[in-house]
Length: 112
Length: 112
DNA sequence: ACAATAGTTAAGTAATTACTTCAGTGTTTG
DNA sequence: CAAACACTGAAGTAATTACTTAACTATTGT
Image 1 (spheres, each protein chain N blue to C red):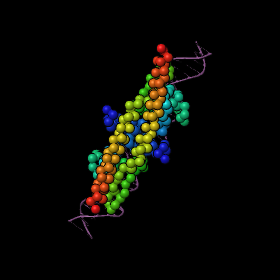
Image 2 (cartoon, rainbow over the protein chains, first blue to last red):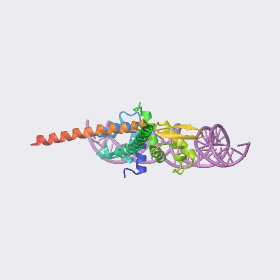
Image 3 (cartoon, protein in one colour):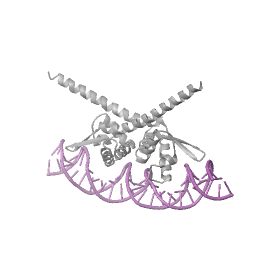
Image 4 (cartoon, each protein chain N blue to C red):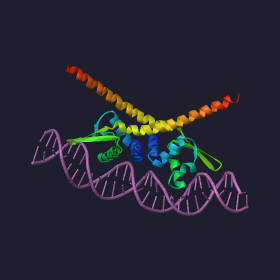
């Protein structure tokens, strides 16, 4: 499920906006209300709610409403999806570079 | 430089498209020409070139033209930017959860 | 009860995105 | 030299994005 391309689309897309990253950054320090998320951002509350919807749709954030305040938190396992995709790519190319290094070393050996 | 928000925007945005991720995936297995990148994708060569431009602008891929073929490679250090941002967030929230765990443990201790 | 607070929803708009087709530019190959 | 190849760039279009304002719904404090 973490590898569903559509899920990765939503996640990377969600992270591709500075306002949304700022919200995730704030939430990684602890839960916050919508207004608290909005406070450092130079935009209307409405816009923040829309960013929040994007974050929730991506699975990066979840929230719950109690009384009139909605409290938001990050969903740790979601970020792992993005992290994992990046790690896989890095491993693939690092293994390739290792093999290339081996090949070059062998080539050099056989020069002697 | 890896923390420039605009750079992160470009990187995450670049990764937020399945065609572009497929290209990065292909390139993590080794260099490829534009046509080779295009081959598995159900779109015009022109569209692929446009995706390639996005990837180059993001710093994830670089390329060089020799004769009539352009050869593309991933730029390993760029992906680290995205990886690093994600790691920082995870560390922040994991530390917080640790402190929370400590607090709960202490609270439980003081119950005795 | 009334006002202030916290958020939600809808509608509108300007900018950006992800394509398309078509008309090129150089580069090899026969 | 001519045809095939590997792109490249411009222009157009439909869909999506990131906002805005304004009107509205609950909840809480006085």
